[in-house]
Image (cartoon, rainbow, N blue to C red; front, side, top):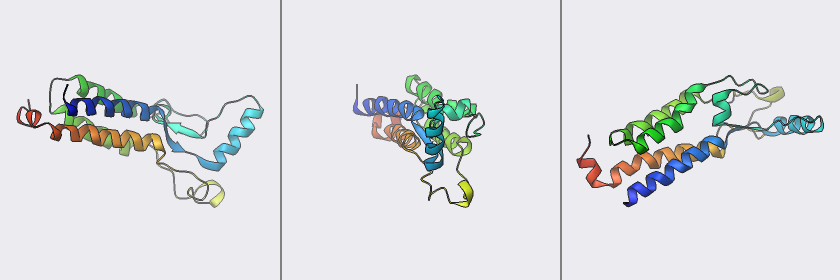
Length: 152
C-alpha cells in the first residue's frame, strides 16, 4: 500500500468521524435549555452534528436535509471505486453539498445578541474536520504520479 492510499484511508475515517461530531454549536442559550431539560429528564444537546442535520432536529427547528448524507456516501464510493477521477470529483462535490445544505446561523441571535457573543458558531470542530478531511482526500490524487497518468 502506497502513502497516498494510506492517507486517503485515514482522511476518509476523519471525514466519517467528523460527520458525527458537532457541526453547529448553539452556545449559551442551548446550554441553558439543556440544563433545564436535564432537570425534567430530557436530553437536549447544545450541538448539532452532520447526522442530525440530515435527519432533522425538532428542538432547534432545523429541518431535515437528507442531501448531507451524500457526503460520507460519496467518500466511501470514491474510496472503493476503481475510477481515479472520483478522487477529485467526490471531495469537490461533497464540499459543495456542505456549503449548500448545512445550515448557517443568522446574524441576529438570541434576544437581539449576535451569535458570536453567545458562543454560537456554524463552524464547530466536526464540520472543520470533515472539510479538512475532504481537502486532504482530494489532494492525495496529486501525490501519486502513477494515478495522475492513469486517469480512467
